[in-house]
Image 1 (cartoon, helix red, strand yellow):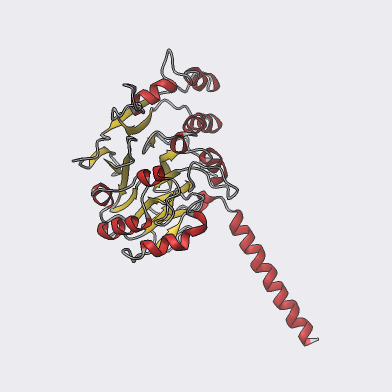
Image 2 (cartoon, helix red, strand yellow; image 1 turned 45 degrees about the vertical axis):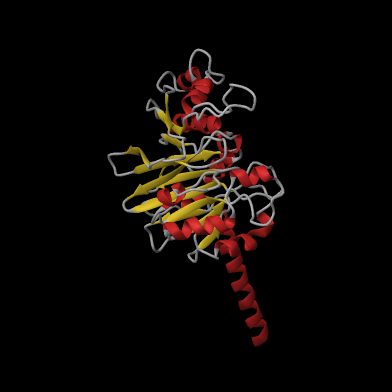
Length: 346
């Protein structure tokens, strides 16, 4: 009888543990946001649809628990916003590192959701959504005078501006669903895309102390910038996509609490030389993280090349960088400034 009672107690304990773990796994990601500055991974993958189901690049930054910034909005990030349980009705800042589809594909869907979230809450939205990204760098298609990439302002206007934006209907949609109370407004901003001699530029300072900076980074012919978001002495740096050939990534990441890095390739698999002309090798990631003395490194923009080889990638990084390294997963949450609540950081 005693043995049976012991077995029953063990089984009961296991059931409680299982139920508790299952409940924790079902909590929406937004419930894990704590502290003054946090980042939620909306998309940790690259441009290729794979069975692992990672969304393309996208991150949501929270200030004092409130979602304030979308940092890239690649395909699948719209679904992750829905799964996260977050309400983005007050979000007003979008930071685009560059204009590749896997970093911009869900931008319009996210913008539309901002107005739906306001409508569901019974609030009117009239404040503009600010969209930041690189200016054009003028690099043409080979043998032509046609630039490969537009400026971010042109990209936004071609989508949303009256009279010719392809998604201009948002101008009437936002008003119509709110009975005329809401108004669709956006303001686009171009940032310097020229890498040689680039200096860190201030994107904005808000009255509540949020500070955003950017610097041009090397992504081959693609105009691209990296970002740093700071608040109350804490900072998150994000590489976007870059091959990090110069000091610019070190400069923007210097002393950051968290550095999110493009992890698309390995040192040993140059299957396509184009990828190595556009992305950072793990060895170079380690060099940058070490030189910048970042507190923690998060590997993201994970591709079919790197996903099965993350141990190899980490080993190459650790030749130079010896701080904590995490491989990002969609809906991970990293909290800064709260020593007791670390989201998925542990």
